Image 1 (spheres, rainbow, N blue to C red):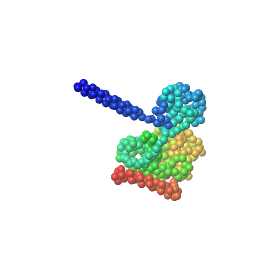
Image 2: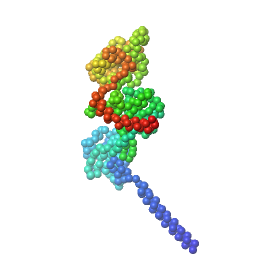
Image 3: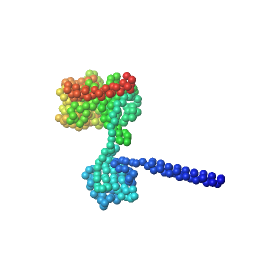
Image 4: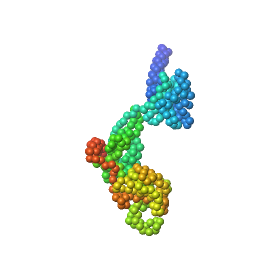
Length: 410
């Protein structure tokens, strides 16, 4: 009787083990993921992912495989040329080869990844088909409000926003905010559109729809708007339709040290005498690019013993600027220049003790101090344009303000 019970127990456990083995096998089969990417189901092929090395070409990749239906490498590369400049492939870029699962040398397709969103498909299954495709993306919109805690990039990152937005906001506000002077606790809000792949992968900010910064106790708004639909670039305006962009840059250099201000009485370091200084001196290394602070026409270029190499730009009937002591002049008289265009290089020609640019500013023919001047914004709106603009931004401003109120319990 004991032996019979023992045998039955063995049989029971053996059957149970078989059932468990079957269930485990089923689970393993179910766990194999279906991978679909670049228009292919990876599970249907033998897939190799690789990276282009220096010297690689489509020809060298194709020659390591057997092409279908007696196709030649030359036939494929010629077909690729119809849609894609094969000289544009770059070392370090990813590519995928899709081969027959039974014979891995039989190539069925090739994918070259140009960037995050676009890729080249060379499909050899029926005939040679070459397409440049885009990965499907979706756009999501949101408004965030925050207080600065650390840098702007760090604050944005904590909100789950690409830190690249910090650079974009710095460009939008470069005429009205000194971002080096922002401090902890300063508030801002921004409405953005963000781009994602369909699988949820974050691609970054696609567009800034509206924003404001609290700076020196005042909210400075910025809304993108085109006064003329034919324009490629948008300009930014505030809640009252004033341009966020100033007609003039604050300085003719990107990086500098202000060494001498506009004054009626200054001891001249070369002439050793007290006299008026009708300019603003910005020290910078020899050869630093000098930018025109506003668009206009070059009125004069040349050299004098006091000014050294100089350029004078007329901006309109009211304003003109001059840039002295250049090591090199890069424009000519009568030439049109745009705001921020490099017109020369920092030097120490003329009466100068070291490399710098003396920046001079005329208003109605009289030299004035630009640092004390309330400078105009560019391209003011007509009454009709202003009415349309204010109606356009009204819901955007309301959204910013409501988000701000909720976030900061105002």
